[in-house]
Length: 185
View 1 (cartoon, rainbow, N blue to C red):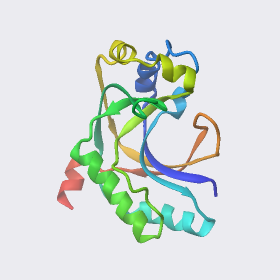
View 2 (cartoon, one colour):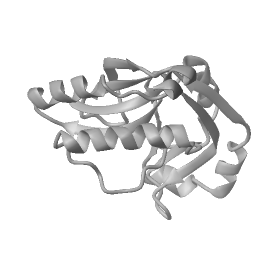
View 3 (cartoon, one colour):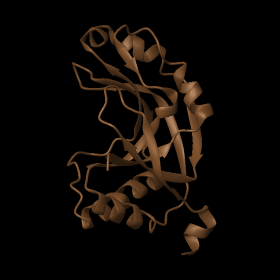
View 4 (cartoon, rainbow, N blue to C red):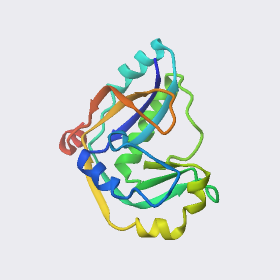
């Protein structure tokens, strides 16, 4: 099976609003709007048997829907940024959903990256010429405004090894519960 990861989908209307941030960085490889997502857990390249076990186990995740708050843009990579992203505020429900998936995946034997989870939506990957032009001014000019949406499900995506991300294919979708149902369990 291809490379797998779990994520929250970005609704098309939010994706279109985020796409207005594009431009001004020659050499940036902008992610296609239909490939915007918020990664929860990177699973990687695994065999078909483990992929089936992962898909089945994720069906048991019982969490409430997640209110997603997007607040500004930033870059990963320090002095030599590698990507530009929209910041997603780390709410308790979002962080609990992500942590519950990591625990489940560890129990199945999936190797989990050992770095702090930072929720985000990748907007562009940067080559050296784009990195040289990425400035605090560029980020500040595009950092205004907040966006929000409620994620009612998470998905198991597959991807091919490619440059720039995507295309991503939804292999399975898992509904999140309405708040009242999640609290009563």
